[in-house]
Length: 175
Image (cartoon, rainbow, N blue to C red; front, side, top):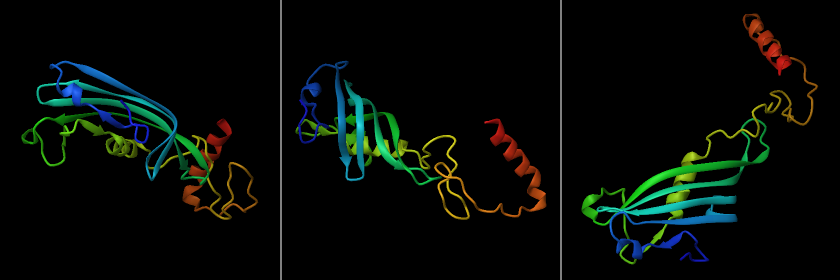
């Protein structure tokens, strides 16, 4: 059923001919796959289930994969696991949709790549962080504090913020 060049191009024509309530699940498992020019995933897995209804085909999907990202604190590259779950209706009739909604193609093939790509981009964190305790870069010299200690002098702090500094230092000691 899957096209080797585009495994997300699915033949759903036979589902249209089935009775209401029919369901078909398509599973995906790829060590590496390119969704679009900006999205290349490792360990990509998921499924797409089409349910036949009176108005069209309801797609319920779940996908997960590892994407190369840059940490916003330290700028190191790391693998970010992105997961998305979504539901879409592919309507039989254009009258049942507005201009942004999907319709069942006449030829019976649906390409899920654009839809999957959109949802994965939406679920990708806006500020990816490599690890919860990432220390980032030194504000003075720019050294990555996760890998090296910095020799920079402590910046003179406004006396009104001294108590906050003490609290932050205490929190670091407690970790």
